[in-house]
Amino acid sequence: MNSEMKNYILAIALSLGVIILWQTYFGSPAMRQIQEQAATQQEQQVAPGSTQTGDAGVPQAPAAGTGAGVPQAAPGGSVVPGAALALPRDAVLGQSKRVTIDTPLLSGSINLTGARLDDLRLKEYHETVDDASPTIVLLSPAGSSGAFFAEQGWVAPSGQTLKLPNAETVWSPSGNTTLTPSAPVTLSWDNGEGLLFEQTFSIDDNYMVTIRQDITNNTSAAINVFPYARVQRIGIPKITGIYVLHEGLLSVLGETLEELTYSDAQENGAEAYSSKSTGGWLGITDKYWAAALIPDQKQEITGSLRHLTIANKDAFQADYLAAQPVGAAPGAKTSVESRVFAGAKKSYLIDSYQEQLGINNFELMIDWGWFYFITKPLFKVLHFFNEMVGNFGIAILIVTVLLKLLFYPLQNKSYASMSKMKKLAPEMEKIKTRFPDDRAKQQQAMMEMYKKEQVSPLSGCWPILIQIPVFFALYKVIYVTIEMRHAPFFLWLQDLSAPDPTSLFNLFGLLPFTPPQFLLIGVLPILMGITMWVQMRLNPAPPDPIQAQIFNWMPLFFTFLLASFPAGLVLYWTWNNLLSILQQSYIMKKHGVEIDLLGNMKASLGLDKKKDQPEKKSD
Image (tube, rainbow, N blue to C red; front, side):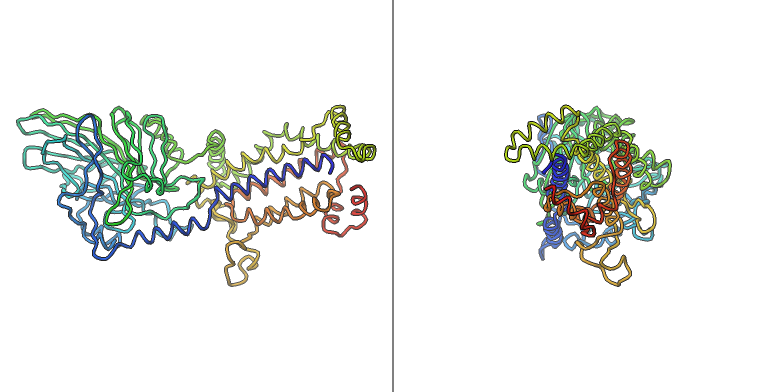
C-alpha cells in the first residue's frame, strides 16, 4: 500500500470511527428510549386506592442554623381532587379559581389556591410543523397528567408557630384579574392574626415572571420568616434520551453548572444535590423549554435538586431557601423579590436576561456542550445569516462557504501536497522495486524523497479531520437550539432539525406505505452519498482490491448512517462535498495532476477493464 493510500485510509478510518462512536454512545439508543417510555407509562399508572398529595414531601433543608426548611406535604395530608386518577389537564384547571395570563407569547393562568404558576402554553410553538396542531403545554397543575408548576412562599423559623400561607391557601385578587405585560396582578391573604400577605405578579413580553412578596405586620411583635421558591414536576416526561442533550434538573449556584438527569436524581434521592450560593438559578429543563427559579442575585440561599416519591410516583424538584430570615417590625412592611423563567430557550433572549438581570451563566440553560467555544459562535453566525435571508437552510449553505474560505489556506496546502504525492507515485513504485523485501529501507528512502520534495504523507488526513469538530458543533446547534426547531428549507424539507422524511423504498411517497426506520433513506442523504462517491472518484481506485471495495462501499455506508441525522446536517455535508469537489479539482489541475473522473467512475463500477488492469499490475 503506497503512502498516499495510507493517508486516505487513515483519514476515512478516523472519521468513520468518530462518527460510529458518536452515534453509538451519544446517539439515540432505541433500547434506552423504549425503556424510558415504558417507565414513564408505568409511573403514570397509580396503584388502585392510592392517593396523591398536592405537594411533595420534602425533607428538611436547614438554613442559617435554624430548623427552617422548604415545606413538606400540605397540612393534614389533604388530597388534590382527582390526583390519584391523574385527570385530564382541562378538568383539573376547572376545579380552582384562577387569574388569566395573556401575553404575546404566553397564555394560561395562576391558581388562586396556593398562588401557583401552573398553567402555561407557548403561543408561538406547536407540537408539529402544522400550525393547526396544538400549542406546546409547558406548565400543568398538580393532579393532572404531566403536572409541572412553580410556587413561592414563606417558612417560619424552627419552633415558631406563625400562621403562614401554604399550598391550600386561597388567595384573593385585588384590582386587575388578567396578567399582561402592562398590567400586574396582586394576590392577597390575611391570616386573621395581624399579618397580611401579598404576591404581586408581573410579566415581560417574553417568558420572565417577577414575583414580589410583601408582608404587612399589624401585630405588636416583630416577625422573622424565610422566603423560599420551588419548581416541581411529577412523573418523568417523554425525553429524547440522547446523551448529547441534557434533560432534567440543573442549576448554577456559584460558578458551577450542575446537571442531574431524572435517573441521576432517582439514584440520589431527596438530597441529590445541594449548595449554598449568593444568587444563581436552578430549575428543570426539557430539550427546548425550561422552568427556572431566579432569586434576588444578592440574596444568600441554599439551593437543592431533589427526587421525591408522591403516592408511588416519581417527582422532581428544584428549590431554594433563603439563608437569612426577612424581618418585619410591628406596623412595618417587608418585601422580597424573585423571578421565574418559564418558556422557550431562545439563545438571544437567554443572553439578554443574563446581561440585563446579572444572572450568572444563565446562558448554560442551553446545552452548548463541550465544544461550546465552537458551537455558540457557529450558532450566532447561522442566526445572523438567517436573520438576513430568512431561511436557516440557506444560512447553512452560506456558513459552509465561509468555513471553506476560512480553512482554504490549510486545505489548499493539503490538496497541493496530495497532488505532489500523486505525481511521486512512479518514484514510490521504483523504491519498492529497488527494496522488494526490505520495508525499513523502503520507508527510509520514501522519507528522504518526501523531505526532498517537501511533501507530507499525512496531508490527506487534514481535509476530513478539519470537518469533524465543525460537523459535531453543527450537529449540536441543529439538534438543541429551538431556533432550528421546525425551521424549513424548501420543498419537502420543512424541518431541518428532523431527518429527511422521504424514502427511496416507497419511491419517495408514491407507494402507500411507510418503510421501517432503517429504510428511511431520503432524497438528501442519497444526494450526499452521490457527492461523496464523486469526490472519491477524483482519484483512481487503489491497486489493492480490498481497499478498492472499501472505497466503493463507503459512500453507501455513510448514506445509511446519515439518513437518521437532522436534515440540516446532511445538507451541510452534501454542500461541503460539492465545494470540496470543485476545490480539489482546481488544485489538482493547478499542479498538473490529470483528472480522469469519468474513467475513474467506470473503473470503480467495473465498466473499464482496461483501466483496471494497469492498477492491478502496480499492486
